[in-house]
Length: 174
Image 1 (cartoon, rainbow, N blue to C red):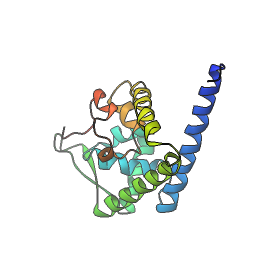
Image 2: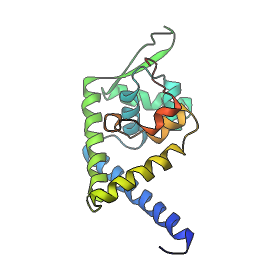
Image 3: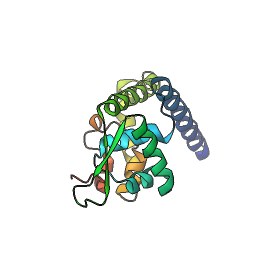
Image 4: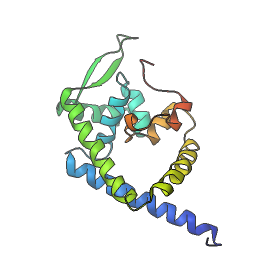
């Protein structure tokens, strides 16, 4: 082990950057959506009924920015606005069938990009890495919104016992 503690931080930063670049390239290869639009499909699919305000907070967008993002998703046929179940004046966001299909393509691109790096890691090391990553992930959010923000491109179906569950949920049906 190297005695310079900044080496690990530097390598971890490089890994995060490299993985992020690979994920974004894989997503862009599988969909016409870019940036936060792709993440918004994942978030809306994870928490059907989410409000525009909640989506904006998760995405780090202003309310007008979130409205424009939702307008683009609706115009593309990927999302729909419906009256919220709890407050008929509020808007709830849901994916259309086309949105679900696009969401699945985005998640598959993300999985393939990450697996291309993980394929070089032994099964024994993967088990250790999973424990370490879970510990680090659990330290990142402070509430349900920030937890969803961290996981805005995650496949919740692949993550039983998600470390983010401890922070609650934005899902209106929960």
